[in-house]
Amino acid sequence: MAANDILNTIQGPDDIKALNDKECQELSHELHETIIDRVSQNGGHLSSNLGVVELTVALLSVFSPPNDQIVWDVGHQSYSYKLLTGRQKEFETLRQFDGMSGFPRPSESEYDAFGTGHSSTSVSAALGLLRAKKLQGDDGHVVAIIGDGSLTGGMAYEGLNDTGHLGENLIVILNDNQMSIDKNVGALSKHLLSFRSSRAYIRAKNKMEKILLHTPIIGRPVFRFLRMIKTWIRITLRRNNPVIFEDLGFKYFGPFNGHDIPLLKKKLEMAKSMNEPVLVHIITQKGRGYTNAEKNPSLYHGISSFDRKKGIQVDPNKKTFTDAFSDAIVKEGREDKRVVAVCAAMMSSIGLSEFRKEMKLRFFDVGIAEEHAVTMAAGMAKNGMIPVVALYSTFIQRSIDQILHDVCLMNLHVVFAIDRAGIVGADGPTHQGIYEMAFMNTMPNIMLFSPMNYAELGHMLHYAITEARGPIAIRYPRGAEPEILSSIPTVPGIAPRSIREGNQVAIISIGVMAKEALEAASILENRGISCQVIDLRCAKPIMWDFLLPLLTSVKVIATIEDGVKEFGIGSGLIIELARRLPNIPARNMLSFGIEDAPLKAGKREELIRFEKMNADSIANAMEKHFLENNN
Image (spheres, rainbow, N blue to C red):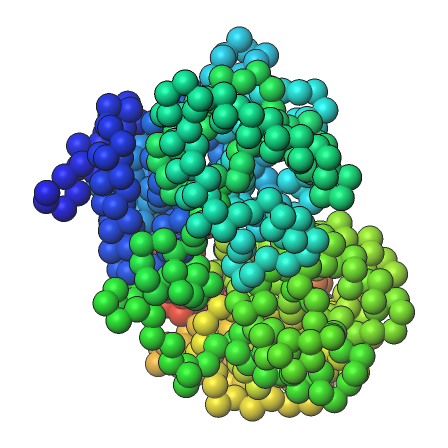
């Protein structure tokens, strides 16, 4: 059979319903191969997608989107779903600029019922879809697929509780692969372990069921008797091992082998026929079908392009801001026993593996529960510890209320290490780290630092722990420090400093955007305009006593930040500069940042150019205003 013989014939879910079980299995194999090939070229989420291929085939064999609606929690496991719902041609543009999204996106296809990107939201969204359907007389089904990692987020239980309370016929599929990105943690993970059976057990159980059901005369009675005994034992032991989902009002089925398509189809048909909340618990293998990902699913979670045959080659000499943070917090933890590290299910990705290895008792992974992480850290700070809460920018958004109420209003000494800040790239709108600087800027008492290189990151973390008091946030980008910034030395304190002298125009840069600022300054110099570059360092509070003396001779000022422009640091800075420097016309104060619209997927350099934040765009705009002012 030629490659993708079956996949190439699939135009939509109706075509899958015509396949027999053997053809469904072959289709699954083709999907595995297609996903591995494309992710190896474009990058993306590999392990999670390979784990749900068979589930996706079974879902589309039983349900009929878009009338039946399927909501993928997080959504980074929806590649096979996209391939089977009419988007094969677009799949080669996965995560590219103006290409296919790596997450469900309703604007992309009617088959994407709800846009997702963060975890623990699927049950709430699906329940809302279902209730709207009922109010409009639509009898279509709604299915939410949620991972066991996402069940560590409290919002999942809000949705489950509401669903079970009124007994609505929502179908929830628990995709249990015992992982989020790193290994799952917490009591819930242990509770699910009591449900899980080994794959050998599941195979034996399924085989025994088939034998009994095909044994004449006595087979079915014996099967029913054994099932009754199993139910009786579960009820008898319930006090010691509560079936949490049944307590929440769901009919619970499982666990089942999540890679057995005939079995999945049978169980999904059963769930579809019931008029009450149903939770189907399946066991899957993250990274299934690609040996490297099976062995190391965390490494192959969210990845850049790689050589399929060789797998991901980890270069120990290639350093990133995350690595620099890792080195810095280990150093601080050794020197001060009050330092504790807190993360939300991303220990290795956020750079805390070495801290945990060396200071395990002062390391806390709370699962996918950012709100809890922040308030728990606040409690630790109140009792004398110095918690460093390490989160991605896109995920810290989930804890705005806790940052305000539980940290800032009490002026507690909590340090937020904000990784993946700014333009992240190919994961698209839900994962860009462009908002947290603007909302942090509204919080009382907080200080906001942004380092341009590794040395500054280490210096700022040390300052935040040893000299600052109250809440401090340090934001830094994904990837490596720009080469042009790597040799710029740090200086004491966190006040603004000049990193390039000039006396006609000035660029105030925040963090790694100093790269574009320095390159723009070089362009302007070649055009005969002297440009100063100022590294702001501390974006809140603005240290005016240090900043204003640096701007006495210039006639045009620009700010550039790796975040939203409206209500960001730069816009507020420009307003105040216009008041404090009346000799510079407001028209000659420019702000560069991300416009007020969702930022699409693409390479960082593509998006910086698209948003006109690149050196050429900055230089052109500043030159225009300077020449207008001097004619």
